[in-house]
Amino acid sequence: MVYSQISVNKRNSVLLFLSFFVVLAVLGYVFGAVLQIGAYVGLLIALVFSTFSAFFSYFFGDKMVLRVSSAQKITKEQNSMLYNLVEGLSIGAGIPMPKLYLMNDSSINAFATGRNPKNASIAVTKGTLMKLNKEELEGVLAHELSHVKNLDIRFMVLVAVMVGTIVILSDFFLRSFMFTNSGDRGKNTHIILIVIGFVLAILSPVFTEIIKLAISRKREYLADASGALLTKNPGGLANALRKIGNDHNQLKTATHATAHLFISNPFKKRNWLSLFDTHPSLDSRVKKLESM
Image (spheres, rainbow, N blue to C red):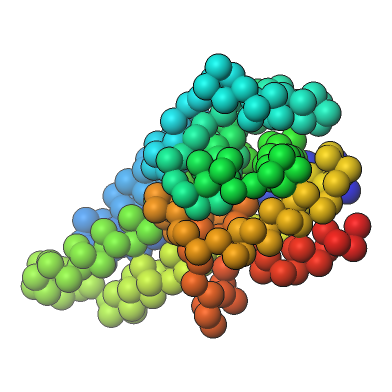
């Protein structure tokens, strides 16, 4: 199951790149026509922009995520307990030791990032170290290392940066259109293109959120199961998830673009919009772990 998921993630990474180029190309073509800069000029701008974004997300996306999360790199001397736990689990998982980062936040949360196991990083909050016992912390770390081994981390970073890129482009179109004089757009602008432009600008961010939703829930269940197999102690992660559910502190540096990276949704409030969460409910995850 785990090895098949690695293959799926490799294939999905390629498909994500292709779908990202297609979405941005369509956006660029339509926006260029509507804003009267030329459809093909808009297409060219979008393709150049998407190429740069894809390159940036692959090679520098992890660094951006760590910076946005205010994560600071730590060494073995600064926290030998955490270092030794991750080192032991990494050996058990058969992957290189990832770099470790600490977020100065009282909530319980963690995430893994990087383009492959050789360039991986794991970040945890101070609250995670303070509020979890050793078995619970080990469960959380094993979960994150499973994301590394399963190559989820590359896919997650790509999604985070690409969602942000499409949101920025859509927002730019809406602002440009609203602040452009109707006469400047020319009498030959087809009303259907204007309608399509607005629909794309509004729905493209929604579309990318649906992509995040589709990939995130399944990979969380898989990482839970893989982590439990790594520690041979499903109860450790289950208890950690219970504590996360009962913890009322919200991660201050969380953003909607990076929320899917964390072990638990950093935005605590759950209402009817929880249908669109990138994470399964904590209760369902605990039940699956208890059934192992």
